Length: 351
Image (cartoon, rainbow, N blue to C red; front, side, top):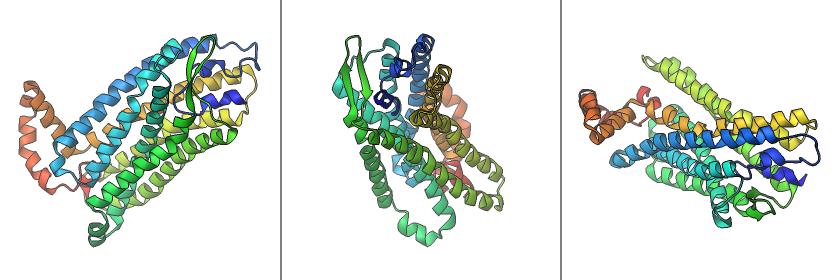
């Protein structure tokens, strides 16, 4: 059905949450669902935007400030944070769109926002995969091999590849998203030419956005955890819990949304109540999935002791109150870790 296309991307026509196939399934009323979405979506999107900008902005500020000490792990962290920032910067526009029901920003920005939204989403997940693989090879490759292949030049090349791949995957969203002037409203919606592009979008999000990344995390971390447990380290159980939290959080935040849009694509539900519940689940699970970008700085950066010292030092310089409370803790330990630490996250601390 032609109207289904509007549901298969991350962002576009929010009126389609409520109006899709309305004629075919009359007298199924969507008024309550529309009212709920007009309040729920702008509220959650605004909250995700604020928390995402604060958390990921801190990561970028700290790593840029200490760029002379940057290593490959720092490079992955800053790219992950930038990806999440690219993603969340589009949310205020979609919050306004869902609130007023019209797109006032023009066709060019409609396509730009769509491409930025999808590129940020994909690059964020791809850099999480890169960080997982990087941790894996650091555990199982010898030092000589690591020194040969795990270079700064290789990191830059891989970074360019990830951003290019994310942008290429996002091209259909840019091409097929357009502003449409109806008699009653102006919409910014994803309208592919045929069903093949709708299937492409489902495959993109379920396979590349969930399936493959989750598989990589499970395989790599399932082999890393036994190594950690055999190490003589007081922090090994903390690190294992962190690794398990990374995998569980990724699955819990993204799987419900991917399952919901897959059910909608399969078009297995026909009765009014089931359709209403499915549309409601898409609204709720989408916002849950988006909020994962707020969690990334916590699980990938702020849990690292060296990174937290850097944050406290920076905040201390921004305010005398912070400076007084962090001076003793920071000054005594930062010099030691800045020389010896191999990366800025907790995984490197135990290594």
